[in-house]
Length: 52
Image 1 (cartoon, rainbow, N blue to C red):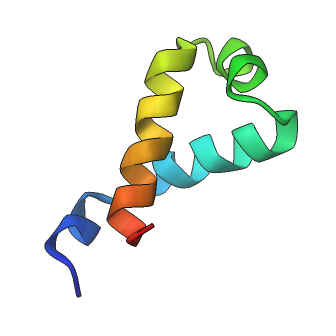
Image 2: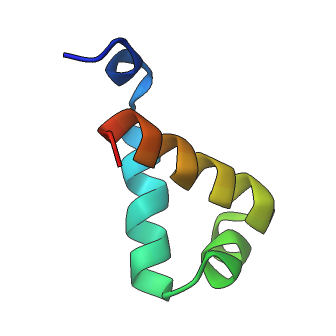
């Protein structure tokens, strides 16, 4: 198991689900009241932690 897996949490799944639901980081970020850059950074962190 990778060490970075320990940083994975529920919020990462919530971000991923919201992006998938709205179809874009811009729309998802409006819904979540965070900047698109923050949401994109969190999605990239999730990808790294999952090994993609």
